[in-house]
Amino acid sequence: MPPHNVAALVHLVGFLTGAALYAMLFALVLRRSTSDDRLPLATAILGLLWNVSGLAVFGIRDFAGGDPPAFLVATAYSALGFLPAVVVHSVLRSQSEARYRRTAAIVIWASYTMSTIAETMMFWAASHGGAVPSALALQTLTWFYLALTIPLFLLTRRRTGSARAWSIVALAIFAVSALHLSHREGATESWYVQLVGHHASIPLIFAILYQDFRFALADLFLKRALALFALVAIASGLYVGIEVPLLSQHDFRSDPVAVGVSVILWVGLALLYPPLCRAATWIVDRVVLHRADYKSLRDDFDRRLATLEETQAVMNALVDVLRAPLAADEVRWMEGDHENGTMIPTTEPPHYVLVAGPLAGGRRLLSDDLAMLDSMALLAARRIDAIRLARERYQQSRLTTEAELRALRAQMNPHFLFNALNTIGFLIETSPARAQGTLMKLTALLRGVLRSPEAGTTLGDEIDLVSAYLEIERARFEERLLIEIDVPRELRGIRVPALMIQPLVENAIKHGIANCRSGGRVAIESRADGDNLAITVRNSGARVTDLDIARGRKRGVGLANLDARLRHQYGDAASLTLVATADETRAEIVLPIARRA
Image (tube, rainbow, N blue to C red):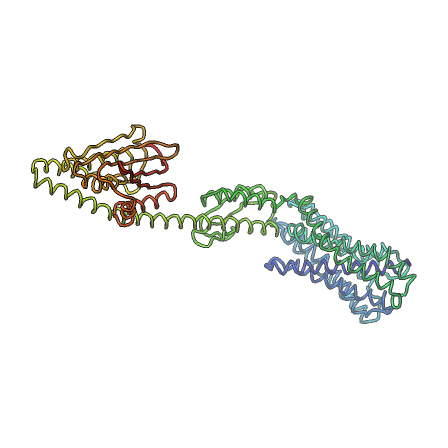
């Protein structure tokens, strides 16, 4: 490939790359949009102006074969001549020592003045038919910034990060010196002289980014720049290795082979860009930044959230998970709003906010860090909303159940009291002395009923209550009522619903003992069967049929009440069974053992 063609390729690739990089810087500055972005914005505009104008200049010269307009050349070189002044301003603008601020201001003013003088010389030569770019202007810039390195180094030597400032100044001097190397244009210049001379502005963009956007440089810019450089390198290699030999043997305008190969190369480059971006992202995240795998981090946190049932536990888990990846001195959560925190977007208050303290080494949150924080906060918010919704549903269900149980019990108490008062009324007529004793027992019984807790009582207390009730009934039936109670002492501490046995005993007396002239026996037994408690009430009075039992469960107040209470409290885990045989009627309650006292 002839040298002038290589130089043309270098210019094409170099100016396109520089224009893309400075355009990325311009977009980055506009996105951040703060008052401190004037210098980076000036850098982006000057770099764009140099690369776009330079591309036009060398496109006209190398591809069109003509002479570019002098003012276009002067504009391009003037833009590049101002870049060192902007970089010097960026280095010295944060001078913290009061005794050096005046000197720094003088140096900044001198830099802009010298670049303005060089620009004036460029346009003077262009307007008067002189050589453009002006050799005198380039030499003036080179020697001025070379002499400026000493005061710049002295002004920045005590500042933290002075080595970085020195490297930026060195890049600026290198760029201006490179301009001096190529101030005379000629076809005999080698391609590397062309590269150094005309494209030394590309390192400047990395210098200004490292000074003002060092974290964005590593995060967004470096990833895209690496992908772009890789794509440009591959495209250049394909052009030199395949396209140039192909075009030397085939006519692109008439040979379909050349057209087909070119189209395949273009399509292949387009398809190659996404994997290059992924590779650049992996290199920056894993090699440069040593960043954690955020996808695995989110998946692990999501699985951990499924085991948490408290909102505070969710926020504590979020803090624990984020402390290491953020490399923060402190990560905490708080209730309310915080202007510098990450809001946990729950649907309802109270809201929480995540606050991270200073990051290690002066690091800032990068775009992927912010995206990870947002996604983790969203996961935490969803779990908190789920916990709150479950609690709200449970509270509503509990209140509904308690209201229904209170209604059922209110229905139960008058029914029981009515039957008890009938018994006392009968005794008053037949035996006033016994009626007085029975009334005292009823008083004690009612005191026990009213004292029974809504949620339940113990089996022992329930048996004592039933015993008091049976004593009242025995005063009525005398020797016609036989009572047997067999409840082991170790079962008396088991929790059971209040007034659970009394309806069964009442039905046994009402439908069994009262309807039989000779009376009968009422037996109460309980036993533990694994994790269940079985309570059985038997009576040997009048015989009933299965149809009678069915009607009683459907229409009777006591049994229907008991069925509803068991269903509300235990669901399908409890059962009430009534069986009628020739000898007796048996009612059995089976329910899970809640706990022992």
